[in-house]
Image (cartoon, rainbow, N blue to C red):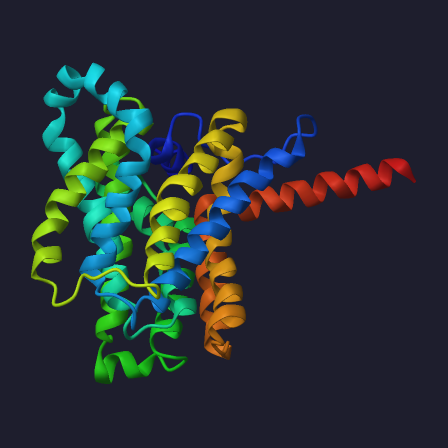
Length: 329
């Protein structure tokens, strides 16, 4: 299998990056942009939650709230598919542990020592990690552009984690918070890969509902052992944002756009999340942007663009535009 089909293999049979269509309602593209903005806000919430609520508590409350909100709509549908769900229950549990329990819990713990800007940029490596994990599993032969994109992204990651001093990684190693964020990204990358590999014959929302339930069961012991799980006026808005907006509304917006225009035209909007995160971190948290944020983040995103084939697409688009201009003259 050639590399250019990896993104298609991992994310769906129709998943290829193409230029936006001339026809159709352009406002539909506001939906994935808004979803990316909401998820960026969730990373800011991770930082705000540091002094407001225990990581295990907000992880549990977040998914509990999402489950309660979605239950009136999804529980009857899940009950109708109970026989099918029972046959694939262990797979749904694995997905729930990776995507709901591990991924977000690790991010909440990492927020104690990592800035929201750095968290967003590290999470931005998820598409790269997903495609790299696909190499041994799908028998893919990577091209030179893929290796180049990987090198650029990982060098950018080294710049980011080391605060602009990559040699420090050799001397001191990686900080705990950065390590937890990488593990969070890795867990979600494995989640995406398994989701595609298993191809469960269950509707998307019903599958997510069961995954959330399984994630809650896994999170319950840590929740019960937390020193403080009290909801207060300070942390309740954070739980509400994470449970309602990041866990329910954003996936709904994303999936609606996905159904209208297809994955090949909206997946690129996921790369906006790290940029939105940095902007919100500056505006809401007063974080300072340093040179290593710009250099490291730029290399990460550019490397991902090379791997995903966006750079050749932009070049072809530029050549086409140039040709049109010449034909007009």
